[in-house]
Image 1 (cartoon, rainbow, N blue to C red):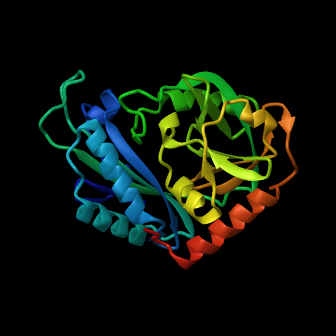
Image 2 (spheres, rainbow, N blue to C red):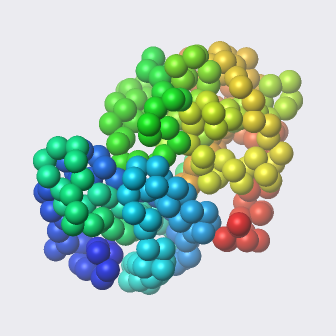
Length: 274
């Protein structure tokens, strides 16, 4: 397996990042996960735009997107596979021990791992912790994922693949690595960005392609929803068949199934939708 590290392809087994890298010591970094099919990265332009937005929000220099594209192409070419998780990690680089950033410049790592298509349905749970819709990192895809690790472990303990959060005012927000959509009275809704959720790439495409409404929703909308589904880079559109102890269905409902169909159809037509 070969990865891209600071400007060149390297064997993954021998690649090294400093133990003083700010991404390791204080979580000072941003990242993107991109679906790769047969050597092509889906929605790469949108992902690179969000990588830049996240870097700016964290105060990092803009990533060199020409280098990032070269690195992605090199990694995909060096590691052929049918379906992969392409991960871009961009950190503050070697820095002092503490929150102050050093002057060594950022670290860029591009890696790829093989994955399998997700099942059409899954279970999710709600968790008692909240997203802070007013935090300094709100809306940024940073490497500070400790809260998600804890919440996802709770979900796994309950036989689910995702944990869903409310924000500090009790509104439905997002999952640990997904956006959430609900069907209420036959209409498709998803929380707006001001709820504190990440501006998911798949979320934005689903809103556009399936006609979802951005709506402020209380967390208990999950108890009333006729259908629920999740969106993310590797889930695409995935039905939630069980939420907490409530069984919704054995498979995707009609609105979810239509959203899945539309997403598959549109993404096949344009692999880099702008």
